[in-house]
Image 1 (cartoon, helix red, strand yellow):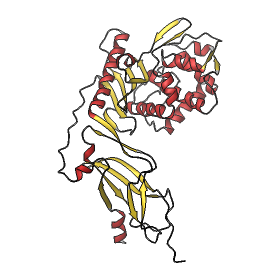
Image 2: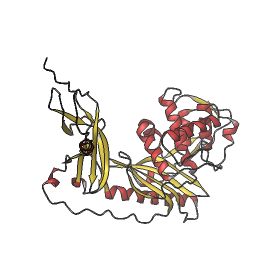
Image 3: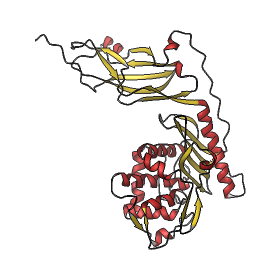
Image 4: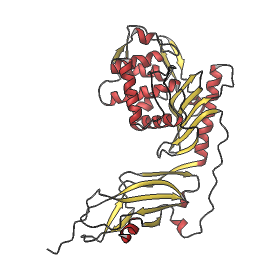
Length: 383
């Protein structure tokens, strides 16, 4: 029994692909990532899109009023209805008196008019129209209540543990709250699951409806060409919020700022300040971190011995490509290890889970992924 336990905990250590040179030379001194300069915000999160790694954070789980960033979940629900074929971008919804009566920022819809989903999404995501958000909610689910219930179900499924919605637009109501971490998770889900819709709607700088021209409140779209979306919002109880994403040299980051300070006298100036604060967060990530493709899906990572098989060894690899996000200049310091069961006995099926790959930077685990058999191995027979 003791031997079995010890074997099951055995790590077979080897140097990661692309970092082989580090195995034959003395370990380089660890590079120090500079601390984030203080940001004028109640909370923030900086996330690498590909790996989901958090690169910087302050009060990331703090529940705050999300304001119009609520419309990210409204868009998520609508995008899913589009993907499932329940509606199309050409589907038209009737504007109810309730939707027309919504206060705050507006698309300026007319009661009784019929407007396409395409235009409603633009009206919701560019000028942040509360009337457009309500029209989409009523059109997709039949009522605001049913749509909000769908929003909260999706929030739970996405693991947004600090989030609860009370309406489709983010107008302040008791019980409405989210967190910087949850907004980053939601932003990542939108970009990953709906890349075409993300590209179509979130980078739009201005929108005209009923001869009224309105600009996007996400001022980073003008200030930084690497920024291609998401959504700002404002509520007096918290301040200015922004979820933004940018891509530079193949690396995408998501930055979320909640409760940015209000140092200026005008709303327009404060939205520019919000863009500056969020831009500083994104710049910090791009300057100090890099995301690397470490192992491709299906690539042989390790050959494990097999008992009683036709082959002496079976190749192990990953179902999904493994990316790692590390401080710039430290990729060569990564070390990978394989954790296997005490023994592997044939027959082995292709795709069978066998152990784990663990990647460390010094003592810190930066990635962990299950290993699978890349090919089968039948049990050896004399006959």
